Structures are given as structure tokens and as C-alpha cells.
Amino acid sequence: RQAALEQILIPARIVPVLTIDRAEDGVPLARALVAGGVKVLEVTFRTEAAAAAAKAIIAEVPEAVVGIGTVLNADDLRRAQELGARFAVSPGATPELLDAAAGSALPLLPGVATASEIMQTHAKGFKLLKFFPAEQAGGIPLLRALAGPFPKMRFCPTGGIDGSNVATWLAEPNVIAAGGSWLCPGSDIKAANWEVITGRCIDAMKHLRR
Ligand code: 3PG
Image (cartoon, rainbow, N blue to C red; front, top):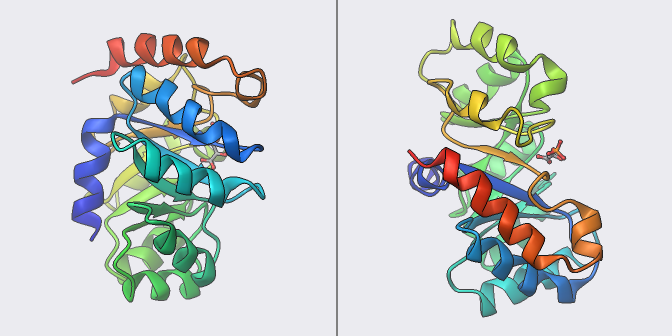
């Protein structure tokens, strides 16, 4: 399952982390991202509107590849799958969630920031991890230090990543994609600044295509 997720994330390069307060913003927001060349997106389960927004995007924006983020437990994972998400993302890696993922068809990207967490996920067969919160936990120096004992693990960092540092993260050999909220901050979503979001995506992707 994680191999399928890798095939989604490698070409994507960047994954916007979306916090959607009004369900009706989901579809125009997803269209704005897709128009900017950003097709893989993560709708976080952080708001009441998240599930309805994700459902609408999946139904109405077929070009978008929708994942669900802020998946905290087995119940969230099940809800994400029921919505028709293509993958799930968690800030952490509890034994309960990892076991639920093992029994689910939905690929999970669990979050880690320490050697012990990497060992726990690796023991359950995970090789692709979210590195969170990437900048705050120690940034690229921490990721490089962790790469020593875990040379086969691949990471998708999020947390504190923006246009100023995303290229540096993506240049790390064990980083396959980077995520974050900088492409569509809440202020732009609130103001329905869809063209601004599309422009930011086009600019970002110009520098990041392999
Ligand atoms: C996440 O869940 O991945 C983070 O909240 C994204 O972090 P950012 O807002 O610092 O980009």
C-alpha cells in the first residue's frame, strides 16, 4: 500500500495541507490548486466542514488526488476511506493507528520526529513517513542525523515549510515530497483568492519539477 502512496507523492513534489472552514470552499480551492499544477492535496480533519469539503472535491474535481490529513485514530482512518480518499496522513504514529492501517486498504503516511518513532513504524512495515513538525523538530540537520541509522526510510516533511525552504528540503536524497499550508493560507481561502492561490502554485511548481 505504501508503494502506491509513493507513486502518488513522488511526481507531486508538494502537497498542500488544507484547512477548510466552509464546505463550499473545497471545490473552488481544489480547482485553483489543480489549475496551478498541484493535484495531490491533503484535506485535514481539523474542521467541521472537512469531510463535506473532501467529499465534494472527490465528486466534482476528478483531476485532484485527495488525501485526508490529521487522521488521529482508527475511526478517522475509516472515515477517510469511506469518503473515498486515496491516502491518509497522520501527525503521529500510535500503535492503534498503525494496526488499523495494516488492516485497511487505504495507504497511511504516519508522522514521526524521533528514532524510536521511526523504529516503531518500521517494525510495522512502514518505509515512507511524514517527518513532522519538520522545521520545528530540528529541520534538515535532524533529518540527516536520522538518515544515518535508517538509510532505507523515505520522508515527506511538513511543518514550517514554505516557498523559501521547500527546494532545500526536496534536495535531500531521502525526501520524496514536502507538504505544508503555505500555498493556500487561511486568509486566501477566507477571501476566496483562488487566482492568487493558482499563481502561487504555478510559481512553486516552476522551480520544483524534476
Ligand atoms: C501539517 O499538518 O502538516 C502542518 O500543520 C502543516 O504545517 P505548516 O502549517 O507549518 O505548513
